[in-house]
Image (cartoon, rainbow, N blue to C red; front, side, top):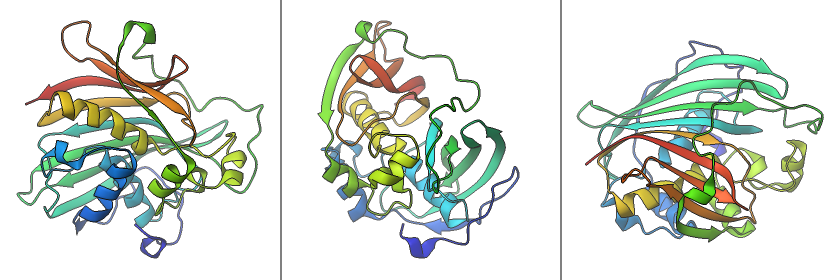
Length: 271
């Protein structure tokens, strides 16, 4: 999405409904984004990577006047009842569920729903994010954005490594080509938000997890909860790890220096 799709910024409030509209995925841009992650689109067999709907939900908020600038993902839920195809007409709607203040800024929870051409609800994206003030430098003394959810992964050394990647500033800037959130491409904006360098968007990182999941399991449906524990900077090297100690995949994470950055609880997978 480009800036031309934005409306005037508004302050979100519980019960704010998004305007319902029909959309279709930009196939060329989706392939470009996957390519910047080194992911072969063929693993999705003509369907849309569910991680795509993390960024699309943010963009839908922007379209409805909810500024993304300075926003950081905290918790993300994704439920897919069936895959949506690249060429499918999709009806999107959404709502602001909760808004509350915190020491570091405003915490907003939203839900965005994606129905297929058959009117079936196919994807639900539930997102909780922190919105800092992008015009000022963050106070390093301020900590916390509310109660932190319990850890999914307590010890990364017990997990199996299934992949690794190293980010570059060029790739991260390319991925954020159409984003309105400057902390993903502008060094000064990142510093104002309290980061040493630009950080990748939550959906960008989750792509590496869903790609690994699709290569191994190719699920038709899923229910996952994703927690963003530490920022991933545009020059970080990241390990992709999975917990399969029970004989099935129950959790995955992106880790740097042995510490969890992004973790995913796998509630259900359906084939």
